[in-house]
Length: 307
Image (cartoon, rainbow, N blue to C red; front, side, top):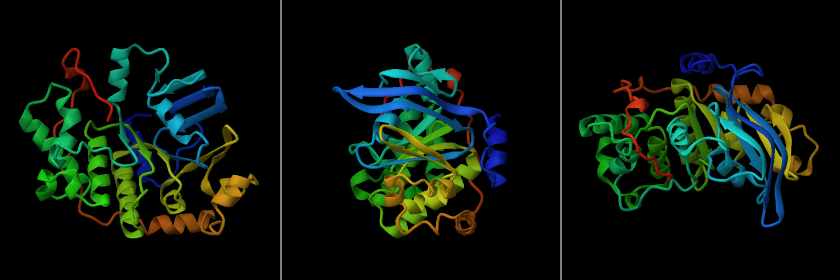
């Protein structure tokens, strides 16, 4: 399934089925850190075009698993393939190329405090060392428009932004290289209800328009209801449930019962579908796609720094 087909599937409103190609495949993963077992026997397939949410109580290993999917941590046993690349066996140069095909929104935004909005978003484009500055400018302004940041804010420093704007700028940076896969770490953490709802609606529109596959770590039930095609529950060192929200809430595990306490009715399939219809895009068409980035044109030895 190519990117255009994934886009069409997302726009149809149908969640990708079990036969959809896997963007991420985790097999028999176990992680031991400092003598402590974090994960044991984890198996997971993230389907192309879906939003998969990872939930779990504090200390369950969500962040560790996310880092391993990003190639920033190494499991003790098992394997992880992302976009067809084995993260354990991949040469560094090939891994750099794969990393350009995904974007990451870190929990606090992780913007560079000394760089303004424009330069933060431009950073991954400039690190390609293959694009003239006028093309970089066009792409940056397009990405800012995608996340609804006005041009006047491009010269502001992160300290001058609200929490919601920091998240949007960080999302623009994550989208700078036109990724196929987007990782979101607690995307609505620290936002008030109004800004949280606005950010969720933005992610939903971007997912629909760009045909993204999204892996999201969250503890927010409203975000799950709005976005998740499937939910993976991490508890007791493993995945105890993976499935649509309305199925997962029926799991008898104590963590699941506690997490969804008071929300079970809202997580019923009919309620979820009704709520998502209220999130239908209601904005002008996206800006033109802008110049196409040729990843193969990156200069030899060009690096992509983790931020």
